[in-house]
Amino acid sequence: MKQLIECVPNISEGIDLSKIQEIANVVRSVKGVQLLNIDSGNAANRTVFTFVGEPENVVEAAFLLIKKASELIDMSIQKGTHPRFGATDVCPLIPIANISMEKTVKYAHKLGEKVGKELGISGYFYEFAAVEEQKKNLASIRSGEYEGLQEKIKKNNWQLDFGPKKFNKQIRKSGITAIGARNFLIAYNLNLNSTSVKLASQIASKIRESGSLVTNENGETVRILGKLKAVKAIGWFLEDFGIAQVSCNLTNFQLNSMHQVFDEAIKIGNEIGVKITGSELIGLLPLQAMIAAADFFLTLENKSTSITEDEKIKIAIEKLNLNDIKPFHPKERIIEYVMKNE
Image (cartoon, rainbow, N blue to C red; front, side):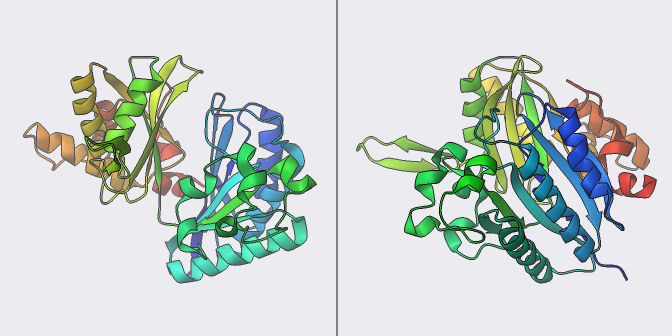
């Protein structure tokens, strides 16, 4: 049985279509790799690629993508609303079939070592591939972003894991890359009927697992945890559509998936006087997440869940309003359907 891993690299370019296609073409050039999705955002100035294949082929495709992105993207002039520190900002490997997380970690380390030695590009290993505890969390290693790299990598606890260890011409141009091994992640955004990033950030702080830091009555800084585990979230302004969004990463969709995030955000929005008008998916998601959303809303309305898969998908799209700002096409977004079509 074939071993399959998925790779979801995020590059810091979402505007120049010729550059995006040039990068996509190096992935397509690797035999045995299926490029399933390309999702670009102008305001974020970011593109998410999704491809799958056998491990060695995926590592080769990821290496070529990182190489090409470093040639085409100049981080010293790059701007965008999404946090970033590199031309290929993040490159996770995800076990899909017949392969353990432990073996996937080995492929992540192999990719990082190859990128460091052959391309002279530096970076960190994160999530399950992390070599130090404080580097597990992507938000932590990306704090300070590209602009803070020169000072950050000098610190003893933030030494780079692969590639040159000092700030050099290559880092000045292409930044650094986070390479990791992780579980399947759903990138999911909530749309507000407001332009207020403050309101979006308020919702984000209440739903994300890490919550927020507050000052208590004794003048001490304490952390108030958010309501949903395995959820990361920030608020931002989506210039393309003139709205504020809560941008979420669902790191364990079996624990908390789209419908829980959507439902909780609506409740918080009602409390602070802002409406969630709909939502947006970035990249792909598993069929299971759509079915779970449909079952949730059907149960909420005391309706039978004994309906067809197609009907459930329609209900999930409708209830989450996934068509709010751009069309949601199941055959292009649900990973099982995309792989079948390929």
